[in-house]
Length: 469
Ligand SMILES: [Zn+2]
Image (cartoon, rainbow, N blue to C red):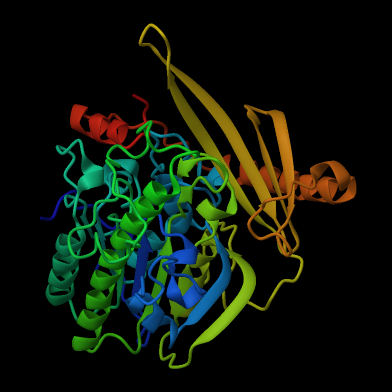
């Protein structure tokens, strides 16, 4: 079960474990990320099933939110797994942590949240079930234990995997085997909501409406039968399967929360629940994620139960995934001793704040002779409380800019770029300063570069659409 166990961070090794003792009273920390989870499926966000509104999709998350703080305007930094998690752990945007290609790894030179906590005496463990969280992509830095064997690389159809029960078993095992004298950071990444959407019974029927029609939705990303003009009853059925995956994962989240309660670990623990990105069902003409930076793939649930919190609160400030690492350090009572671009969620509001997004989208198209053409497109975006600028192009060349009034048009339907030159230029300036800052930070670290994927690992990422046909 335990694979890829990595030593704790450099600081802990230098200090020696016996010396690296956490001060008394620091809280335990549990961070959970859900794969591909749209905010509008989460009940606590007012979301749910359109066909079966009487069946809750996320009862465990909704119950968590009753005694936690729900961040209504929380966004990822990108629309895919590896880059988003690298930001979660470093507090840096993708341009700064330089982990944005489909085979990339986060370089060891970057300080991470887990390294910071390990060096202060925390026991650190990660239990993960998707391919981009495997040890080789560098996100296990600072974790004493890293359980990444649950999504087996030998299975090329990893998107069919059912991993939730093994995830729960590994998490409970770690909770029982841990050293009770040390505070801990426990990280869990639940993979199952990723396509293909094949939840086990009864979740496969739970959200199916009377008019929905089943279809072969295998190989979701490359399946030519799943396109923007497909029959509504088929698309609704696919979305019902997606909701089934989320509900099936939510059930296991509920069991994880119960496991913490049963062990007396609930009340004083900092619990953070979020997602790496959302998922698109042709909202802007695409399916899946990692295609663009529109709201359906970057708006994420973020619910934080602070130690001792009993009351449910809502905070609608604009916040980002890069805020998680500084928040954890703040709640634990430590100053970050490395550069972060996020800020603690407990810090006073900053009304003029802007957040940023970055994506290297790779498109693969099969040519007549069977060859595969690869087209790389750079997407960047900046959002403040009123507007969002989305830019795309090749390399540094800008091909298109779109501007949305997110306050009145949260679905990003009406592009205002042509009629709002002053707003456009203001956001361009913000984006330019952000890129300069990110480049300055990146210059102090090494780019992790591409990992050597074994044949099974390559096949698994290929089957998921990340490496082309
Ligand atoms: Zn993901």
